[in-house]
Length: 275
Length: 275
Image 1 (cartoon, rainbow over the protein chains, first blue to last red):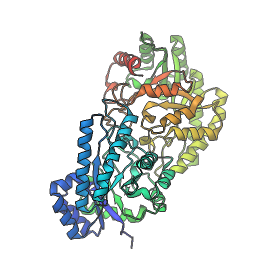
Image 2 (cartoon, chains in turn orange, purple):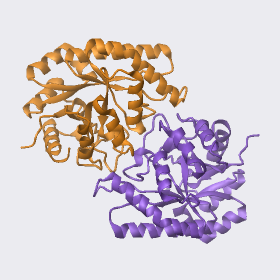
Image 3 (cartoon, rainbow over the protein chains, first blue to last red):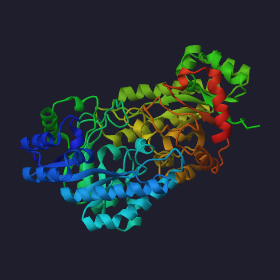
Image 4 (cartoon, chains in turn purple, blue):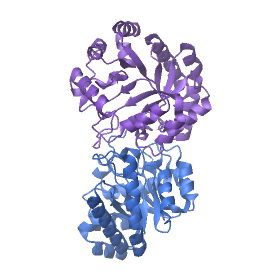
């Protein structure tokens, strides 16, 4: 029997039409022990209702996705974005999620200064540390693929995530989420993971399709692409990480068109064979 | 008057329907001093005919695009790929192009081992050095954006390009092409360019659109995206590079739908204002 005791499924892996109760139900029915919940879905169903449902069903949470996008050049907008992260941290605490995935934000076309956008992201993150600490939820900063640098996140490499952590000096509250999709291409990924060490507080798995057709919504099922996922998992586990391994596949043209039970069945097979 | 004395236009910036004579004509008519020619276009028109046309019209060449893709796991395929690069080097010599853009090749879904794919690319490149030296054409190894790692090139960063050059010890024959599109996101781009120093033998400019819709064919005109092109140019020129600055914009949904004279007009404006 394959060991599925660390399997987590991110809510966005299932089709939009799958409701919160259906999502929890399909995981529990298929004996998936962990889930990562998506903010908009949680708010739609209600934070307290979601917390109750998850607890009743005995589903563990690997994380809460996501908040951030706080590095714009307008100070008032940035302040509102930080408040929104604080609100999402509060929700994560209610849900008893161990971490909130933090996405820095991209490059504003109004200023085009990437170094400034990175500095503002780090400053904003620093301002959030006290609140995260007070509610007991880790901020899991997630390097995203460089192709998302403009639209979504200026945090593009493990090296930069480590640099930020060095500057924040808040390893009790700020961790790093390693997503295979984001880091697999990096010639320095091994040293970046080793350097992160115990900062790694989450791992997401999925695959890069050889014929990727979309920058955001064409992720592949583990085993359908070119990433050596097992090698990356081994690097992460060599740091001591022994938490959930979360399947996050945003796939508009394929998996989002399928039946939830079928998707979970394939995930379990692939988790056992290639992760 | 803006200084356009270093402006080069890559042939693939113009629509597919633009013939070789039309391409040369539109550049000369608009007083663009340099071009970079596209291999398939050259072969279609004939190498000798192209060389004659370009020389007659007094058009300088900044480079020849491209060859490589030689890092597959099958030895016979790899040998054929190396022969194809040698043939393309010969063509570049006939054209009197100073360099041939070298694209490493991606990750073969048959083996999924990125480190092996990188090692094979470097090995293949090493085998080509004597031929490139003998015909007097530089191999301009071009880091490509990490989103092309699977499909096109495992050479994903300036740091890796520098590592390869260190190992090759052939700086007389192997240089580095810096493409703004490929490197702009890299937190280590400044140190990577500085480290490259006199290895930099070509520079390509274009922009990253905030709402990029395609991984390969949705590049932006300088000024239409988020890249601080002038800052990258300054970094490259600080190394001593004083050669052509080549506009390479693959844009299926926008520029490839426009009239060549219009495109060249916009390029000249933007080259003067934002490059």
